[in-house]
Length: 450
Ligand code: TRP
Image (cartoon, rainbow, N blue to C red; front, top):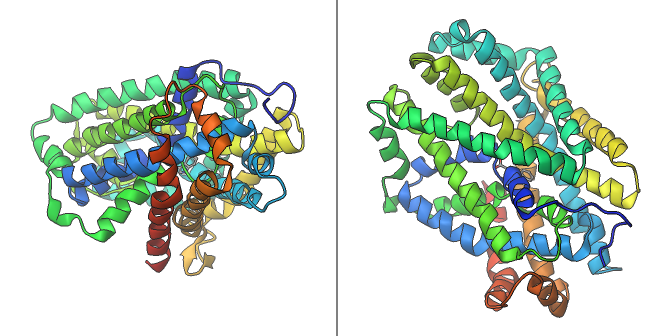
């Protein structure tokens, strides 16, 4: 029996679920961070380490989250409470939901920039990015205009509400089935343009040239942390999506497919970005500077660059939207399960909470730049505490829960549904018991020590 109420919805199809979960995983991290980290940290050598961690830490934890979600049919708090009643394990779910609210609050601010840049690419492309000075000026001016910061943060949140209020099958699944293939097509178009430019080879060399001398402990932990963050693990997003999954699906193969798509898109983003950056004589970088200053300049130097810029920012908006809706869904599932609120009310109120919490982040680049937390802006502090502290800690407890806390026979039963064999079960459970906790503890310690 599923928990969580009488007519709890389900994903309509396997592919719909896979695309929605891949949509959660594929976000800004894949596009503006992974390619640069790859190039900077040893190219192909880094990739080997990254793939190792995806296979041996990322996929096992994703399968663990899916098992918790499907095994309970509940939101992260309700899931732990149902599976281990009368114990403090539910706090792991509660921390996850809190983490989700904070991530959504600042993720939506950056996503708002992306929406704004779609408009800039359409309407003021020729003037805004004509030179490096204007491109920088455009971005800085936009960052410090409070009204625009709040407006686009608001508009992005409205998009999230539109999708999530329509439910799992009719909202998230339906939109993922439209948006994810669109993202792929747009990315392929950008890759074709980038790799056919004269001088593109330098970008490919930057991305993939193996340099095994770069693999020190720090780089290895970066690979681990990126693998974990990129798969949206540690806060119950995958528990939540798993709670709407039917018992016929194979959890290991689902997790592997989602991780494969996530990594494939991250590599493709590298192929779309760095060949063009190098061919046009710019320097490799990452984050907002790359996305909102360097890349628009690269496009401005290319024939038909305006079209490429529009394609790029639409693509980035899609990547951000499918991640943000999964964050919002965690909160919405929580209140629809626990308080039995209707979905529409849950969606609007939870989005409003994340919106309000995001306002200090949005204003921190302008009028509220004086306000800091431990010397960081509200935006940076929100990012730091979630990505570096709360997510690894959440992942640690999720691994320990499935490895030691939950009843092993029940875990086995949940995993065996949709599986013809339990071949990987022993390896998996020992990864969750020992290897994954050590790995996550290592990320956690290195992050707070940094
Ligand atoms: N995976 C997302 C990215 O690569 C970011 C992210 C981390 C996330 N944790 C999440 C998204 C939880 C949704 C839910 O950008």
